[in-house]
Length: 86
Length: 183
Image (cartoon, rainbow over all chains, first blue to last red):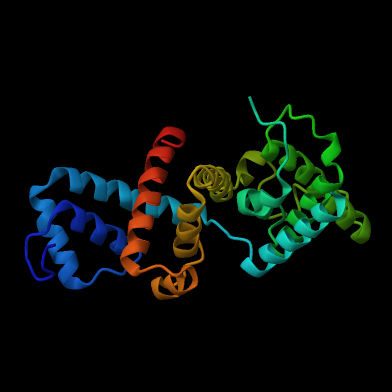
């Protein structure tokens, strides 16, 4: 395993930081290492652009989730209805 | 061939969010949308015998949902007497009489955008439904519900590094799915 303090990171680590950065969870030092990695790794650079696009699309789509509690209640309701039938 | 058997116990996990996003873009009220999705599932259960297996389970549920949405608007209209649509072209004398002078350019752009976004939301939901359930669940919690990493880890009993691996796999699959269906 690589040490956390190395300046040069491998692609696996770069991708991990890139994912974290999509959720604003990458630290400054991590972002710097990612930039440095992108300077010489074109495939990670491309991946990063695509990853950013996915984030933008998800924001734009304004996706919604049903309330988890409501989902669970609905699941239970369906389950009990099914068991009554069978 | 679509499978001709219904699996009502999996409906909520598989289709609830898809149907919810479909509904919310049409009724614009989260609570009402939840109720309509619930009614759809229950109506589906009642009429499960009528399912012939010609369409996929989801298409069939969407067909039921569409009727529920129409019923909702009908009920709303008859209750409030809003059934008629009033078109009044010239309520302001200061503006020109020609329709061309009154074209609202800005509105049309946003309307189109809204339609495009709605389509996009359904495509993303579609792509999400093709992911392994756990990947989709983690992605939803993180991206759509905006939950903290720590909270998700606690709830699903996974480690943060495990979470990022799952997120990475989900995002990679979504990227290629969207590349096929959106761009």
